[in-house]
Length: 450
Ligand code: ADP
Ligand code: ASP
Ligand code: MG
Image (cartoon, rainbow, N blue to C red):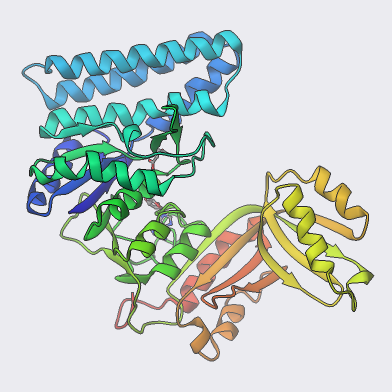
C-alpha cells in the first residue's frame, strides 16, 4: 500500500478535490490511504475563532464559524451541482453544531485550554475528509480511532505500539477491499478518547505514522511545490527542486525551518525504512523529491534553510577553566527549567547557545546567576547550510564565509553529524545571507544534484 497525504492548498476547493480524487484513483492498484489536511486557511480560521471566543467576543467568533462552514458548504455544492448528498449535508451540519457549542463554551468561560483548542482544531480535518469521502466515494475513517497519543494537548506524542495495532485492525482490512480510504492528518486521541493534535503542520507526521504502521511502499507528501527545493522559494525565487535527499538532510532542513515537511515526519519513515516523496499536486508529472536512506554523490551543499527569531545566550564563567562538570551543571539548569537548546558552541570560559524566542528564561537566568554571567541577545536567526558531502569537500566552509563576508556572524556550529553548518546572524540580515549563500553554493541546474 501507499500513503498519499495532501496539504491544505491541495484540497482548497472543488477543483482541487477532484484532482486529488483523480490521483488517488490512478493509484488504486497500489491501495492508497489518503491522508488530508484541513482545506487551505481553515486551521488558521479555527485558531482565530477560538481566540476571539476566549476574549469574550462571541459574535466575531460565530461570524468566523459561519464563514468557515459556508465555505465548506460552497465546496460541497461545487462538487455536487445537482444536489449535495444527504449524508454529506448532515455531516457538515453536525460538525457546524459541534464547533458552535465549543466556541460558546470557550466564550462563556473566557478560557481556552490546549485541550479545548485541539477539539476545535480537529473540525478542519474532519470537514475536509467528509467532503473528499463524498466526492471520491471513499471509505471514511476517523483518525482518532487509530492515532493514539498521550494527553499532551497541542502536541500529542504518538503511542506507536497502540497506533500500529489499531491501524492493522481497522485500516488494513479496509485497504484490502480495493477502495480508496481517506482519513485525517494532524488529529488523534488519547486512550480515553479525548481529541488531540500533533502540532501545526502535523499532517505530514500523521502520514509517516500511518505509513510505518501499515508497511507502506512509499509515503507521498503532495503539496504546492515540486518537492523539497534548495531553499524556501519565498526567500530565494531561483531555488530548484532537489531530486534526492537523505533522511538526515531532510531532518536537518525540516528542523531548521524548511516548512515543506513537519520535522517529526522523517523519524517513523527512517525507522521503517520507507522512502518519502514530496510532489506537486497540480503537476503530478513534474519533478519531485525522493527522501531515502542512501544518497548518491552530489554537490557539497544540498540546501539552505533559516529559522528565526531565536535568542542567543552567552554563558561566561571563570569556573569553566579546569572544572570538570561545569557543562553538566549548566545543562542541568536548562533541563530543570524545561528550556530546550538548539545550537551550542563552547570556548575556553564561555558557552554560546540558542533557544526559541519565546523560551521562558526568567527562572533559568536566576538559576544560572549563581555560577555564571549570562548575556541575552534577542532577534537572531539561524541560517543552516545542509549537505551530506559538506564534511568531505575541502574549501566549502571557506566559500560559505566568503559569500557572507559582509554579514556579522555571531556564532557558528557544525552539527555533530557533520551535515549541517549553522550560522547565527541578526534576524534582519538572515534573508540576504541566505540569498548570498544560495548564489555562491548552489550553482544552476547543470549536472549533479539537485
Ligand atoms: P502543505 O499545506 O501542502 O502542507 P506547506 O505550506 O506546509 O504545504 O509547505 C509547502 C510550502 O513550504 C511551499 O509552498 C513553500 O513556500 C514552503 N517552503 C519552505 N521551504 C521550502 C523548501 N526548502 N522547499 C520547498 N518548499 C519550501
Ligand atoms: N491543518 C493543520 C495545520 O494547518 C495540519 C496540517 O495542515 O498539516 O497546521
Ligand atoms: Mg505542511
